[in-house]
Amino acid sequence: MFDKLAEVESRYQELERLMLDPNLLGQQKEYSRLAKERSELEEIVTCFREWKKVEREIQENRSLLEENDEAMRELTVLDSGGVLYLYLRGMCGPQTPVVDGHPCGVFSWQPPVALVEALSNLLDGVAPAGAGPAGKVGAA
Image (cartoon, rainbow, N blue to C red):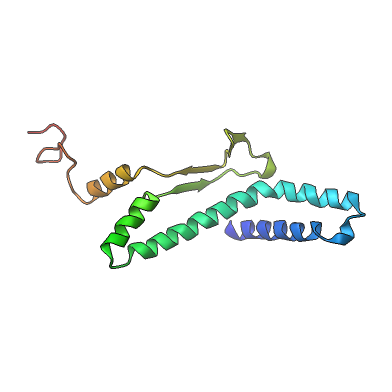
């Protein structure tokens, strides 16, 4: 899938280069054809570039988390919220429906830091505040 997206991005860049060619100025029909093709790829390329940006940020944060500096690890978790979920599915090019300015095939969510920390504590076996001895809320 990512190879196909990289090919689409490469074609998009090629179309941008072609559209800047001064020899194309007198060829309105060809320019329009290139502009239409570029427009059809734009949303997909924008989403793919955003995904690559998020992927780079995740890798950078992962490397920071692996450092021995505890303060740096804490800052990394607080800065990124710890997690960003990004889903790509059902993309159908320029026909992908858009709702509230977001294409329907792209979903993202960055949970609040407090939620990430609470889940991390829960997975570490740390009982939440107000929990009883068995980790049950309200137990005495």
